[in-house]
Amino acid sequence: MKIRYLGHSCFQLTESTGTSIVTDPYGDVGFDLPRVTADVVTVSHSHFDHNNISGIDGNPVILSEEGNYEIDGVHITAIRCCHDDEHGEKRGDNLIFKFRMDGLEICHLGDLGEECTSSLLEALLPVHVLLIPVGGNYTIDAEQAKEYVDRIMPSIVVPMHYKTKGLNIDIERVDRFTDLFDEEAEEIEIIDSEECELEFFRDDISDDSTQIIIMEREK
Figure 1: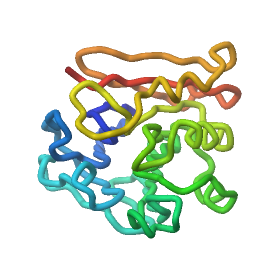
Figure 2: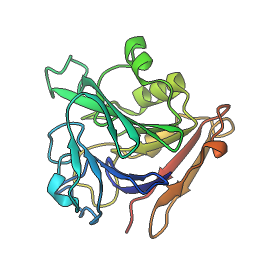
Figure 3: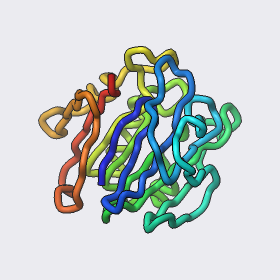
Figure 4: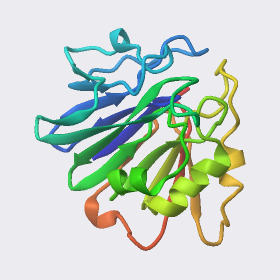
């Protein structure tokens, strides 16, 4: 399966069969959303930087409610949690989406804001590829994100929802998160190319270590 980073919390996930999913398409955040076509669009919550459905081409199925789905052979689970650490009193609910694609479990945490609890972990596991917000202010911060990584123990971690060039949202840079890891124990890789896309195969995924991949948004 392939993961293409479109910026902020938006990714295009493509299974080998061709089924394409876009997560949390954004509106005006200081830069433009690339035009892509998808079969499915997932929306973690209704804020403008996560729900720009009209920005995606095609006639995608929109998933914005808790539940279990199967679309074109891809199993998708939407898990309700809180957008803040006050049981949703400040910012309401958030949906975590899990995708099973090409034998891999991919988890997109959306704008997760609540602390890491055993009950939430039980709902999430297992996870091979974790897409996690790290910028704080509106989501969990770097320290909380590290706790999630330490407890979930995914093979691949891709940070999202952090301060990048051009972004006009008040959140922290990604290095506050990566600085918390011992580079001797955790492999950190920065992918900065004209088209930021990764391809994963189940046989390539190691269950014995965690790799952090920083995917720089396309120019």
